[in-house]
Amino acid sequence: MAVAVIERRTEDGQTVRVTPGPILLLGAPGVGKGTQAKEIVAAWGIPQISTGDILRANVSGGTELGKKAKAVMDRGELVSDDLVNEMVADRLQKPDTMNGYILDGFPRTLGQAEWLDAYLAAQSGSLPVVAISIKVGYTQLLRRITGRRTCPVCKSTYNIYLQPPKVDEKCDLDGTPLARRSDDTEEVFEERMRTYESLTALVVEHYRALGRFEEVDGEQPVDAVAAAVMAAVLRLRG
Image (cartoon, rainbow, N blue to C red; front, side, top):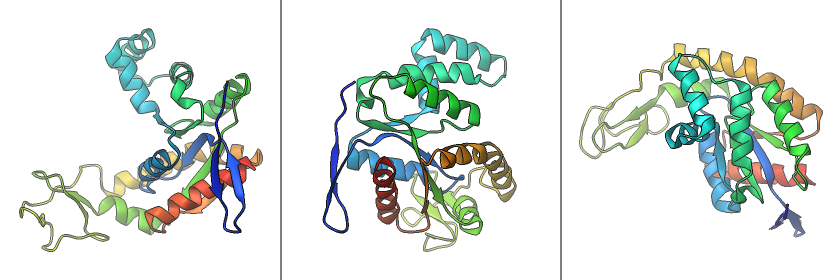
């Protein structure tokens, strides 16, 4: 498989040539993984690969994998790792993944991580995954999640703690009372954090043990976090 490289200049003026390869962004709910993925997509021209998007595309497209997944979901069951792995393998064969890609929502368990490592190792010319964890303190995360508000009319977004409207709980543009998602509560956030930590801790330790893991400070401005993530990828690719 042919690969391309990206040239970037380091702080000391040296030029580094690197193929991004597979990049796994890790982080608790609210750290800004989606925002950072978009920054990397724009900077490096590689796709963001979401298991949710893959699943929906297969189901709506009526593929054989999609039919199997729909049957499982219609029974109210979770789609198995084996079926998710098959869908991911199919997506990774697309031409736009040649230079690399950002993994969103996969692998989220140790089993999925081990499968992905073995799959990539079997592909000629494929680079291994590097994992970057975006770290944000618990209190900041809680404020990001529970403070989110949206105008139901114009869809403007606010955060009552971090980016509040001029008038409490009302849209700056049309004065409409702002809405809060039903799951943006402290109780739901705590449960999501427990689930994230129980599943992802093993994935973090897996890539840390392989020397393919770094953490970046997610409480910086968006562009600073993006620069830190991309610099971490360059270091891990060596």
